[in-house]
Length: 108
Image 1 (tube, one colour):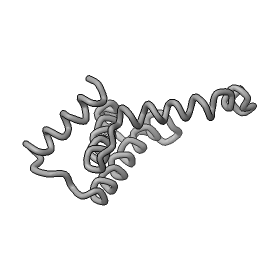
Image 2 (image 1 turned 90 degrees about the vertical axis):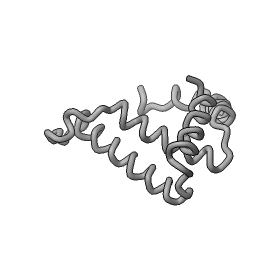
Image 3 (image 1 turned 60 degrees about the vertical axis):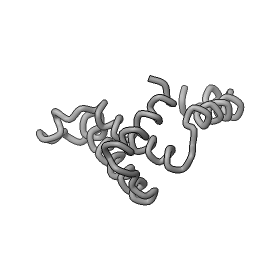
């Protein structure tokens, strides 16, 4: 699935199953909540905290997909073409950061 397909799929689902998009501020709050859930699993599974029994069976991929879903919702409702935005962002990173990380002593 391409990014464009994902945006179209989410838009179709929202309009046929979800009825309508939540407002942008609501979706921003939902995104924050979803990122928090993802952070909890990452910090407990890969960080120093012990993983709670209730979190051991949580699907990391599903949590990441929840974040992606809400990001796509925000892009759709604000008129952002994510394929175009990502291409521009990658171009920026390639020009601005071409040698930055290779020259970073902290990464060696």
